[in-house]
Image (cartoon, rainbow, N blue to C red; front, top):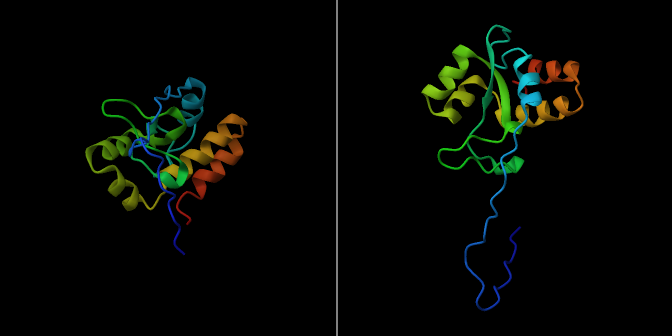
Length: 131
């Protein structure tokens, strides 16, 4: 089904103005993420809070600006080796090879963190590879 875009009023800019947002930072959320097992391997050793930096509009995730870090709500637990791999290759390819939708996982873990629900977070990680 198609939809019709209404005409712009005269003088209105063709490109919408995007407001600068302040970056969301939460050391408490990052600490919660680091306490979980790696979402790829399941190990607890040397787990880091890895930012998912590419945009995914299905989740309202617009990506990061050049040279800026992503908001802390878009982090997942990765062991050091997997985090290094994530940075050493195309990030989308990394996640495709792992069979994981990192934005879905990051959003679910963010909710778990806000409710301090570690058991739910462990279930999210356990079922990370399910569609």
